Length: 304
Ligand SMILES: [Zn+2]
Image 1: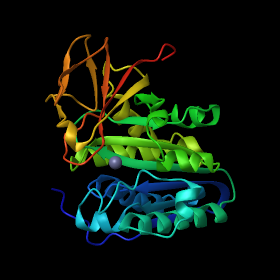
Image 2 (image 1 turned 90 degrees about the horizontal axis):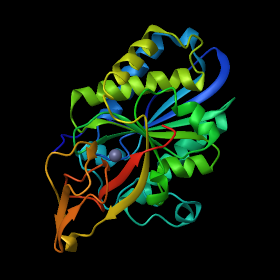
Image 3 (image 1 turned 60 degrees about the vertical axis):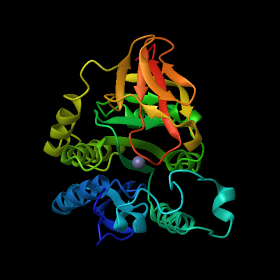
Image 4 (image 1 turned 30 degrees about the horizontal axis):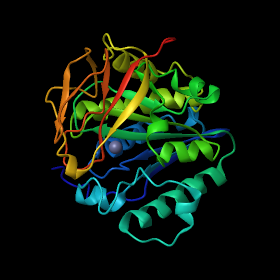
């Protein structure tokens, strides 16, 4: 169980540079058991204060599920990284996450309203399983230009299998977005990885006048060394949707992204064994009590 971040509030901080330019919005802790994003945001903000003179545009760092972060719980009533739509946001708030969602949406809208250039949004996450950092993004040309600067595995097509994520919603609202998984919850290396992702994103978005700043170069090296033999671009093919009735249990030992051979045992449920249909990659295996995604299944993208 994660210990809560008692002192977290909606706005983690912001730095506005002396010249016009893009706005980068970071959202940390949409899941309250993922404090790593908040710690990474604080670390980068502290350094950006010293680099303010070199900053173009603005950087705004926001906490996602504030009350869940304080309590160290993934969520209070429902997953805050679902049900992002204009229709849902127009309804009266009905549960604690509805309240969080409306406040977060308002903070993002305020940052967009103040922007004097293109707006980027980076959604920072960590995972229950260990593994290398990777990026999830909706595949458009504009998004590709932004995410391809990050030397981590890039997951194509996950958005098609999950409805109502924060990053897809704001992409449809005209922002350039990505979601990054930095590593295992509470692993200090996940904080390092998420901070590195923020530095590379700041360079890729154009916020840093010198995109070869030492922080950016060090960040790229840190991320690049971890990919190993994993494909650079992975296509997500399917989602294993589960309910409590399924009695789904993932086989132990899979990382966030784990190569699997045809026929390999992946998990078990009330109907028996679940085996790999062909050679591929296990994505986001479930090793925590709460969740409706058992795992996702993918393969190396042909053009990766
Ligand atoms: Zn998360």
